Amino acid sequence: MNKADSLKLADSLEKLGYAQAQSPEDADIVVCNSCVVRQSAENRVASKLGALKAIKKSNPDALIALMGCMVGPEFHELHRHFPHVDMFMSPQQFGPLLDLASKRISNAAAVDYVPTEVPPATFVPIIHGCNNFCTYCIVPYRRGREISRPIVDVVDEVRSMIERGAKEVTLLGQNVDSYGHDLLEKPDLADLLTTLNDVDGLQRIRFLTSHPKDMSDRLIETIAKLDKVCRHISLPFQAGDDDILAAMHRSYTIDQFRQLIGRIRKVMPNVAISTDLIVGFPGETDAQFEKSYQLLEELKFDMVHVAMYSPRAGTVAAKDMVDDVMPEAKKERLDRVEVLQEKIETDINTRLLDSTVKVLVEGNKKGRWYGRTATDKLVFFDDSRNLLGQTVEIKITKTSPWSLQGTLV
Image 1: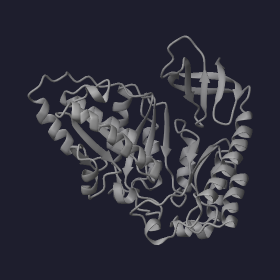
Image 2: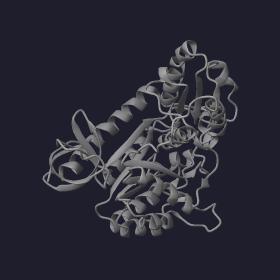
Image 3: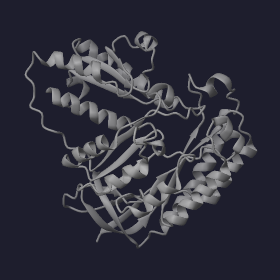
Image 4: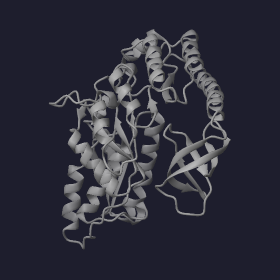
């Protein structure tokens, strides 16, 4: 979501006549886009803002702005800690910065606007905010309630992205499955996917993140029948115990989640499913964690994003629950999950050895091309030609838990 916001703001600044600087030290405007989903992320933002103080000292006219989820409705405390920051903007609230940027450039020589190329695989938000209020999550308080974008607006943006080089789009939302419920015509994600599937020049469509309580059978069947929609679903379960799920305010049971996974895999046997898991949520016992561990063993996800619980100021969990799981217990649980998941991903990826897969080439890293399959497997290969943005066939010659390697067919 933040990458999409940054791309949109950069494009708006370029339309005013600005050009991207090579470094913060060379810039007239420096924008730090913040994520605070975890404490470690917020700490990195604070560190980056501290480093920007030197830029303000050497160039007092430089405009420094902070945007994103770190900026809540009240930002006086932020201004007190970072007085060298000129402007604080909530997510998607670009207006004040663009107004000031426009006034500043009116007396300068503007650069002609040439649309910047976008990555072959890019992001398009389709719904902002969240209505779920999971007790551990700060997002609804920072990004607000759900607001869906009309299908026509999304299609227009996707076409614009294609004109600028995109081949794949990932549709974004804190809860992408609830798309459209607030629009007059009441379209849903299945309707949007069906419309986008007919857009010329678009090769692949992804979406994230889904919520188990909102993933309908209609959506599952639509994914299965549309040729451009990738067979990869991000479906967080967060905890394997019903009491912990209730404390998280997740609105489903583990049995319901298990049945949902079964329906998805029945319709799409070769689908790849990734998930999210929090360990050490307030009150989680060893026995309750074991249920999460056993669910991972049973369902065998293609990827697991696991995090140790940390209180986020302003959430229900931070206010009303005691963070009573010791740090060493959280770390032990996280380590166990990572060891298990490494084995599971090793087994899943080993099955792809000697197979041929289609890869959309997204970039070059240390002299090697890389891209992803439709099931979100990262693949590296060598070739001397410029293959950026092309879809190529790769024979897999080596596998690991985290990526695949192969040769061009």
